Image (cartoon, rainbow, N blue to C red):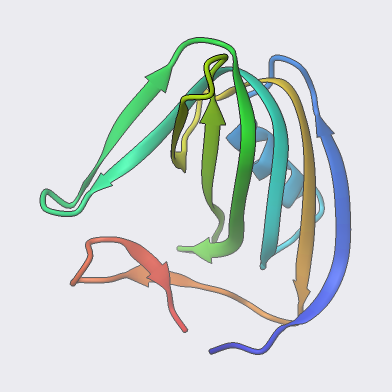
Length: 140
């Protein structure tokens, strides 16, 4: 367990047509946040996310190419091999209320989106490869 203290907090609007994951990465880099949490809500024109196949130890990409509500997008900010890494899961719903979700991926295109980000002060969260799961997990 790592004890953290709150640092700065940010609220950001992601512009129409932007890639959501890239916009989150840009927000992290622009504000030099090395550890923290974030969440977002809104709507997307297209969703791209991944499911981790535990047996095969690989991600399977899923693309929903239609307007969807972004019901929830929650994640954390850490570092992997010296670079900022956003680990984020997202839940989407279509016009019939059917829900999809998984690990947020590039090419999720924003219709409207509001982001809240909280920095952890004086903490460095690093990830390292875990042999058991095949994932890059927090090293805590």
